[in-house]
Length: 184
Ligand SMILES: [Zn+2]
Image (tube, rainbow, N blue to C red; front, side, top):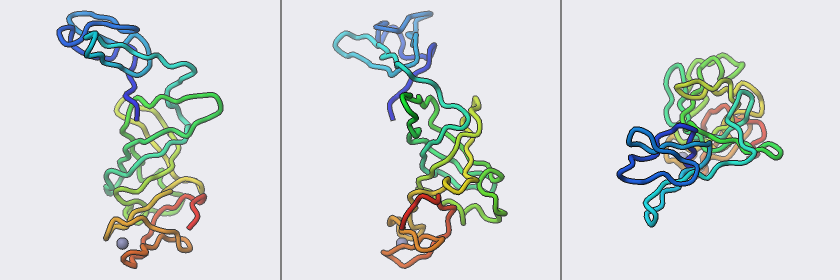
């Protein structure tokens, strides 16, 4: 993922890097003027921001992909990988941390979240809300859920077998909230 910076985001101290294009200095620090990607030049000793065109920030309803980083009793932590592109738009991901609360996982009753997600799985999810501390996701639709599952025994990539995943390496059968579009 590109390092995306927000307007006003701290880039460097003035001692390390001077202001370059689309950045400004204040109180000994250098900050981004626009939404874009930061570029540090050792040669010029300055830091610039390459501003985006036709870019907007992530919003409710966007589809994203992420990797499960932690599974707790009441929520799943996700490291965001990318947003599913829409026509003519780029979506900037300014946060990499997201979570799925247990109530947003499935329309089924969720007794044990580990039967829905495991660490390392790649999920397709919908943005439910963009909050200051991170992004809330949901997977309670048929085409949302795990798109790439990894064996909880041996970490091999799983294949779909009926409504479950199967590990061809060690034979483990694994339950997940599988996104419907996945073909085994
Ligand atoms: Zn296995």
